[in-house]
Image (cartoon, rainbow, N blue to C red; front, top):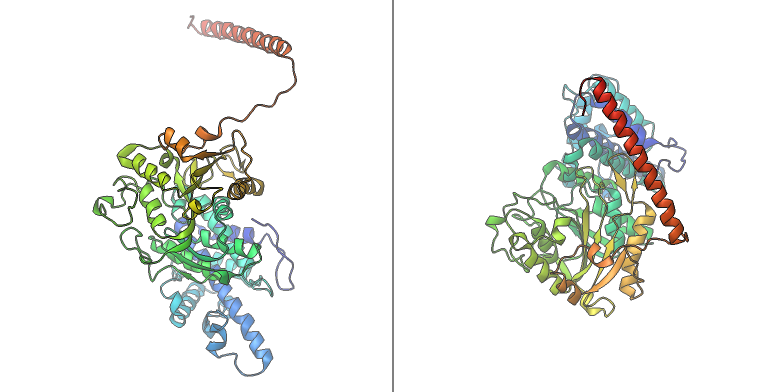
Length: 509
């Protein structure tokens, strides 16, 4: 996450993300992180759409044609219509009055009433008693002093702030964070492997929309345009679904997340659609997913998933929605690579035999706020059999040693780590991969069959060679045995000392 922002005549020199977070954290008081998350993110969203509106409004006033109150002028540019009493100047004027919560709630209601796509999305709980109105006013002041929209980069400051706050809320909520947040480095790894340049992108458990944000960023970084991709998603949690709608609106991403939140397995909102790219991080090892009621579902092309674990239900649902030449990347628990329980081994074997598995990546542990377990990436490519370099082969990447511990409990994949993983896939697709012991290797389907279709990368990449330190063997053995002898001497000395201390207090051995 960037710590600084470009200077602009109307924009404070940053640390802005941190300032907003610090203010929000102080405002929290005794409200749970899961509750005040909606307050903070809702306020960021209100400031953003107001700034976007005001920017267009000023431009129309300067044109002098009298169109500044013409709704069509705004909608043509994808800008939400903001009624006069909902504009930031009204909110800012009330910042240090007891009515600030009601003013914000009223602004949210009016904006929803004027914009169909936002109906039922925005939080309207700023007037509640538990929310410290003095601190709320301070946060409003902080937003007022920073212009969120600048020429040439309308979403950047606020988009970064929204993303930063999502990350910090995930950190606060710990185990519950998995419902709405996938660490950015994991999302970026998937996106860099899948490379969603042009087409339809789908995430059936989209959380707060991180896969889509990173996909859009990928396209822009490769000199593309947001219009090059169209976004489709689904989310079962109603609060998270609303967060995603706001997150994508801030980024200028027009997304079809369905008319409401819904369970992907029982109410597939994109039932008849196929997608060029699928990116997802479904809940790990989900037990109560209702599998016993979906035994004969047409999505289970490779076998009926067990009723007590949804891993292969998610995987098959996504493959089912993949176009004939589509590419897919998903995060799964490591058990999916080797489990033989409840028919999972047969499902995995059938998927491998169909030659759509392009690669498996073993990731390091401690990447997630919600769990410390290591996970893996499944990379699926339905068009793989049409390319001689890949047909009948699978790329295995063991990335368990990559990443940097950024806190005692959390690891991050850095840019170099992500590039190293993605470059292996690029080389594999070109038939130019140089296998590296302990990191990457290509295995044929026959070799995988001999391993009972277990896909753990460590089985295929081997162990990295230890660098020769040029010390002659005899000298090394003398040195090491000498050091071991000293360790034994110290061990004996400590044992005698412990015995004496125990005898001194009447517990002789």
